[in-house]
Image 1: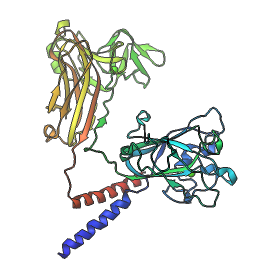
Image 2: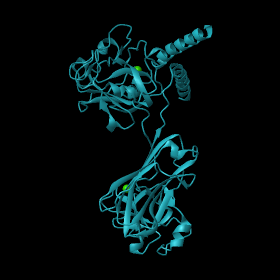
Image 3: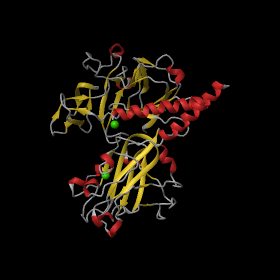
Image 4: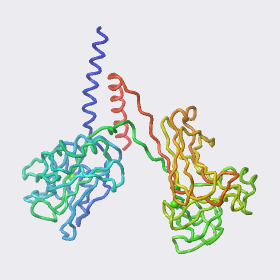
Amino acid sequence: MKTTRSMLMVVMTMAVMIGSASAALITGTTIQSATTGLNADMGPEKAINGVGLPGDIPALSGSHLQNYAANWWTGWSSAVTDWQITVDLEDNFALDTIHVWNYREGGTLNNRGLRNVEIYVSPDEDENNLVKLNTNGSGTQDNGSGDFLFPVAPGTSEYLGFDLDTSGVTNASLLDNARLVRLDGGPDNHDGGSTWGGLAEIQFGGGDPVTGGGPSPVDIPVPNGSFEDLYKPGTTIAGKVAIGGWTQGVGPDCPIDSGQYEFDDSTTGTAADIAGWIGADRDGWIAEGGTYGRDQTTGNLQGSIGRQSDAPDGVQYYLSNGGGWGNPAGGLIVSDAPLAAVENGTYTLSMWANGAANPIVLDLLADGVVVTPTSSVDPTLSGEWQEFSRTYDPASLAGLIGQDLTIQLGLGREAEGSQSHFDSVSLSFTASAVPEPSTFVLAALGLLGLGLVARRRKQR
Ligand SMILES: [Ca+2]
Ligand SMILES: [Ca+2]
């Protein structure tokens, strides 16, 4: 019995520690974008780097100095009508504290700063995904129109700032998984001045993100999955295929078959480095004989990158002819470097295609071997671009954990029909959900989280 009771005590202690961990200061934040000022001493970083707080160290509490150079301020320009600051938390967090110190300068000049502020949150780094936190005017610091009303700083010797009251906001779930936070003050600032959209400091507290219904899918970048990246040989100068032209294959030193390459330095050429992909199954390609007399040395000169106006992703796509146009070898390409190591979870691989040649190939490879998908959907090809996909669940990945993932695609061997086109290749991964934990395991996981937070902090 005694053992049980002490274990219970440990669990309770853990619960208390977890509670405090979730209010942890988020460090290492950066400015994603902001209205910038006339005064170089008053850049937006002054609102997140702790300057003006005790010891000039970021914190969730403490008195902020009454000094212009410890503030972000935008300047007197009447051309600026929208004061905004967007902070990148540099990771995803469940936010439980947003602590604000409004603009605070010496003398009477503390009576300025942001007043009616719209707050936006995004779960990723893309500012296009910012969503307004409150839309109906609820919340005790709200002015009734969905904005938050920021009080002015006092003229006293001490200014402790305030916690933003997010209780009752319409889109509270945004705070469960936040990456970007924008404060948009518009033109309406304290002191009647449309030019006083400043802030002394904003700091965030939180813990690991909460994502409803299990882990969210994460995109695994597919280099040149859009087939838009090509470079002048030996340089990083970008280019494209001239309209109506097409290449011989992919990879480095890829010759043009028809037309020319147009590079961004205004030169043209007959060879380019088409990044991200190389030829696959060279022996199979040669055995089918459909090489159009292309150089067979590397196997890279299968299929083509073409440019026409209707690509679903940019202006270029990969294409290959079939036996109907004298090329039963088709054309297969593969990622020229591993995209990721196999982890326990579910992968979704997709691509867009149109045309009239078959068979269409879209495979995930582990250490170069085709993985059998759990499910796959192939389109009935037509002149319309269509997306199709394969999924790979943990069972189909058994025994492959840690192996290198690559993608193979194109028109398969013994190809029939005239020509097919391929574009917009994507791969995403959803980690396997952790089984429903017992209370004790939950507490232990919380402690593990603490360790992770500590480690993350050290890395910064
Ligand atoms: Ca500051
Ligand atoms: Ca494309």
